[in-house]
Amino acid sequence: MGAMVILLIIALIAVIYVLMGFCIIQQSETKVVERLGKFNRTLQSGINFVLPILEQARNITRRVEIHSIDGTKHVLFKTTTKIDLREQVYDFPKQSVITKDNVTTNINALLYFQIVDPAKSVYEIDNLPNAIEKLTQTTLRNVIGELELDETLTSRDTINSKLRAVLDEATNKWGVKVTRVELQDITPPESVRRAMEQQMQAERERRAKVLEARGNKEAMILKSEGEKESQINQAEAEKQTQILKAQGEADATILQAAAEATAIEKVTAAIERSKTDPATYMLLTKYIESLKEIAAGDKTKTVFLPFEASNLVGALGSLTSLLEKNNK
Image (cartoon, rainbow, N blue to C red):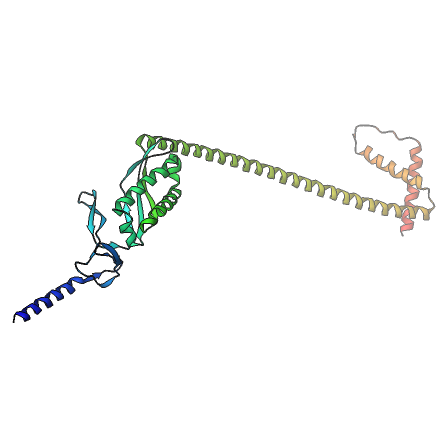
C-alpha cells in the first residue's frame, strides 16, 4: 500500500509537471525561453512545452498608455513575458526643441516600429520602450536643430524621412524595424505665432493687391487691343470702300471711253462718207456745248455772237442733213 501511494504521488507530480509545462502562445506573439538562465529558444504561436523549473520565459518591460476619464494620458511600464510581434505605435508627449534660428518649439511625434528579432530585443537592450523613446527624442532634437522654423513647418516629409532613417539604423541592433515616423504637432511660441499670423495677413493683402493690379492691367490691355482691332477693321472697311469706289469709277470711265470711242468711230465713218472736214465737225460740237452753257447762265445778260458764228451754224445745218441721209 505504501508503494502504491508513493507511485500515485509520483504520477500526480509528473502529471502536474507536464501540465505546468504546456504553454499556449497566441498568434503574433512569442516568448523567449531560457534554460538554466541561458537563452534556449523562442516559442511559436500555438501549443508549446516548457520544462518547468529548468526552463522559464524571460521577463521584458512593456510600455502601456492609460487614458483617464478627464482625458489625460498616463504612460506605465509593465513587466510581462509576452513579446508582441505586431507593428506598434508610440505616441510620445510634447517636447521642447530649438531650431537653427533659436526658436523654441514644442513637437510631439508618432513612432511606428515592429520587433523582428525577439532575442535581440531582450538581450541587446534593457527596457526597449524607454530606449526607443529616448532615442527618438534625441534624434528629433538633432534633426530639428539643423532646420530653421520656416523649414520645420514646411518640411515635415523631409523630417520624417530623416528620423526614420536614423532610428531604423540605430534600432537594427536591437532587433527592431522602424517603419514610419510622423510629426503629429508642431507648436511654436505664442509670440512667433502672432508674428506669423501678421506676416500671413500682410502676404494675403499683398497678393490681393497684386491680383487686382494684374486684373486692371489685363483689362486695359484687352481694351486697347479691342480699340486697336476696331480701328484696324474700320480702316480696312474704308480701304475696301475706296478700292471699290475707285474700281467703280474706273469701270465707269472705261465704259464711257468705250462709248465715246464707238461714237467717234461712227461719226468719223459718217463724216468720211459725207466728205466733210472732221475739224469743222469737232469745232461745231464744242461750239454747241458752249452755247448750252451760255443758255443755262443768267437770263438777264445779253450774249453777242461773232459774225463768223452764223457761218458755223449754217455749216452745222448742212452737216446734220448729211448725217441724216447717211443714217437712212
